[in-house]
Image 1 (cartoon, rainbow, N blue to C red):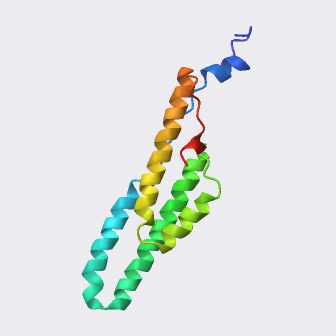
Image 2 (cartoon, rainbow, N blue to C red):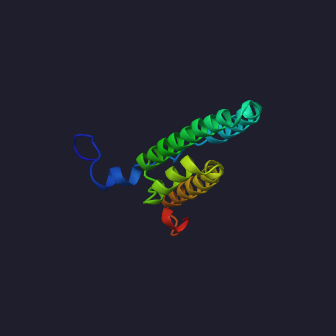
Length: 133
């Protein structure tokens, strides 16, 4: 410490702890997917127009949730690269992209948190978050 009581330089860097990565919108995806499936089965007898409307609305929700989740993860330091555009497009157009994103992002979050914990403990196994991709 310096004479004025404030820590400076490498003292601050050594004691700074990076918080764990958390996907704030990720747990909502399976709920929306399941509700969309149930609503789709309920409105299917009313015609194809109602079923297509349900599909459109649920896929808009998927795309919005995936985009918001990726933005939140990027703010926390988890870099996605250009695949973030592919996940957004796939969530908008493909029915099983939202559950796939749920599983893949969980794997990326877990790997990043393990990497941060290892770096904090000072282990030599400092892997990058890109090794999971």
